[in-house]
Length: 320
Image (cartoon, rainbow, N blue to C red; front, side, top):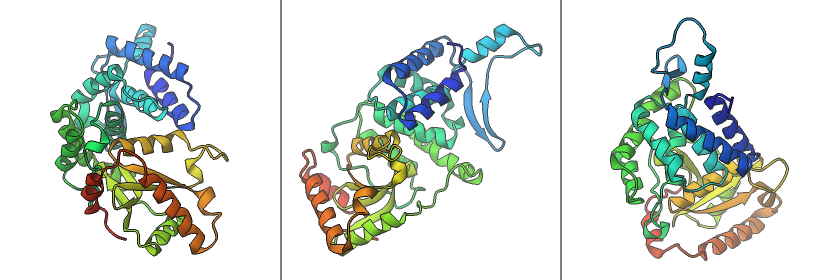
């Protein structure tokens, strides 16, 4: 209870990314942040040319007062709420209507002031925690020709996927994300060029080309909130998982990698992971082609993927 709200949020983020945040501790942090937010949820996280700043609407006296310091620790900003919600999503939590309601209430008043990284987290939280329609009812979220595609197109797609999303909030959220792009790029917080593919990624892509499998590399979705490593015709996202996608030297994928897959699946994509330990052990084109063919047959047999999805997505994935 003595921790600053921002400290708790940052610790929750760090531990969840590392896979070290147990459910009990996460529940305690969530409960504490929610309790504080009900008492006092002022302040906003803003990104200016000078960097990240917290703006408190309560005037403070020049002389330090221990009671004011204690009160400052109890303040909860939009950044704190989004951080704890995102940590919950990474840790595997799904719908949490109470926490999401507080996040949306805080973000609603501050959307135009949120930083680009925070807006990306907010979008992922909304997708994860909001009840969406069954993915089989709609084709996967379309690929974008550019991260600078009109934000309304991205918002329209999200609204088609949920009856619970407030339209005005979604349009403002995606518009704010687009507005923050130039500043985030100038400050070195983000790059909007397609990510550089790893050598392993390029070898997987080369094998798919040899198999005559149409696909595109580093394809943006949701205005660049996520990039799909390899997007295959029919709504299949192939994620090439290198060493940084696993917990230490184990074969267990880390929480952030699993969370990324869950977000894509909730947007209607089937996700196929190609672990570096398996693909690098293959010798020659024949073995690699046989391995990928087996993976594709296995994932194509999964239920919940309709022919309509397959046809609806085919026009979006460019060959590369």
